[in-house]
Length: 374
Ligand SMILES: Nc1ncnc2c1ncn2[C@@H]1O[C@H](COP(=O)(O)OP(=O)(O)OP(=O)(O)O)[C@@H](O)[C@H]1O
Ligand SMILES: [Mg+2]
Image 1: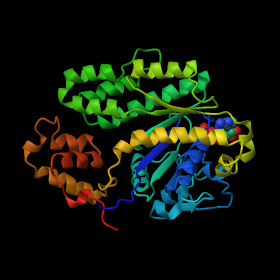
Image 2 (image 1 turned 60 degrees about the vertical axis):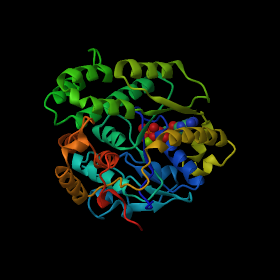
Image 3 (image 1 turned 90 degrees about the vertical axis):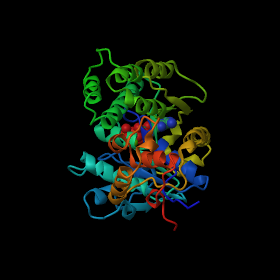
């Protein structure tokens, strides 16, 4: 098999509420994976309010993602910074730069394309608080979204709003060109909390009437959209009533199954280590936090390991995409029979990696699908 040094897995960490422990968790998860010998890159996409560099004790001025966004450097590789933890590098966020906190959609796609081409086993994207489109988009562009919350009413309600926002943002993107489904999704996203809304099940029912050929796509979304939940400042094994309510609400109202992958303990001494989180994990008081991170990372990797495609590309240049579209135009209709797919649908609704997976599963291959031998 050809070697592939694009990331095995891209995690994104979000949560709706501010200050619930997302960034410390991101650094700790990255440190644990790096301690196990994996190469890790942390990416600070809390645009305008970055602080991963602080938790890593990087005080002096380094290149930041702003240099890439403002086109001072051509590639994200150019802003990678080493950290005190062996195997772990950082793409640092920057202080507030006017216009940068809210990049255009094409710039978000460009950032993600470059993130996906970074050579690392794991990439961990730290996101800001709130339900800003940036956060929702980066969350849904990653392989697995992790929602961090605290077991308190405000944080849990914000986590619910975030999950709902991420789901509908994803549906909006997928169906944005569909003449019948796009208006239904738009109406749903404009509903206020008081109005009864549709979850995935009711939407699937509607789609059955509106456009039954889209049902396989809905089933894929139902299967894939499964955020992981981490509850901070709670003892191991405990499932707080508010967390149970959140899981029930997501299942009943949205049709989304979230996976509670673990809790993190409350450790007041953490405040003495805010400039050296990797070192904290090796202290006596950090041991229970590290144990919890070990359990959580095992669960995250076990599930997501299923999605690893060892030799196929995960990032595609514009030339690759054009080539794949051209290739589909030359295919016999027979390869789509019984699949609920067509060349037109693949082109409109699927990401290049999904198209490539589909084509390979139907026996079509091409050198542009695979990474080059290095
Ligand atoms: N497990 C914990 N035990 C004790 N205190 C914690 C724990 N996790 C986080 N904290 C406290 O919460 C503060 C905020 O943590 P962190 O910066 O990780 O949150 P955040 O969700 O990333 O915040 P923001 O929304 O501003 O990005 C820390 O400075 C620390 O004091
Ligand atoms: Mg943060």
